[in-house]
Image 1: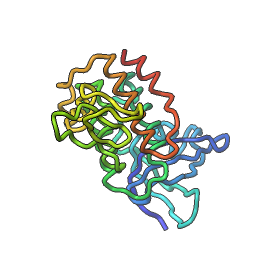
Image 2 (image 1 turned 90 degrees about the horizontal axis):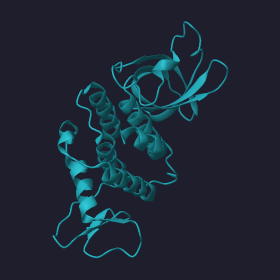
Image 3 (image 1 turned 90 degrees about the vertical axis):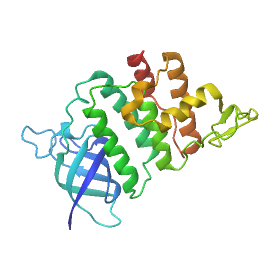
Length: 241
């Protein structure tokens, strides 16, 4: 049976000389693997350039229960990105976020709220002309709400440490090394609560931004099974420095 669904491309893997398997986060079926044939042909029905990381698709798919690899009847970008593929900083940020998302939601079932957050955030990021180099930090902290480990707000003035393992403020340093001081933790909460449209109001120097990014990745590693190491953030830091 054919179904219409929206999709977010997570990973494309070569399957044969002209075919690929694409992992797509769909709003109707969660994460699915789709076999797409002929993507490298000159007149491909579904060309390779629409299957880039975090590209947004309107799909018509075949769906069979308990089948590991599904098939696609139609796929078209919706909307077509106008800036992300051509803007070096935006493209590098998207490549980084794609790696984190792939490691964070690869076991995810259908979750329309999570899907809509990613989908709408990518549309906003593509359309905005006022690029904020804090976007990836805010995106990951906001994403944590949908993944179930959002940071808790500070409640007392004596709570000067943020415990990354517990996701909460504390008045004394934890006995483990996975914590940050209040100065950096305040940025955590500010990035978490500030709308994307106002991110340029947050001024963070490069040294602190790198520290916050490192701690966010530790935060994800502590709260996401089999998260592993992220490789693309080093390239991201070089581009943003």
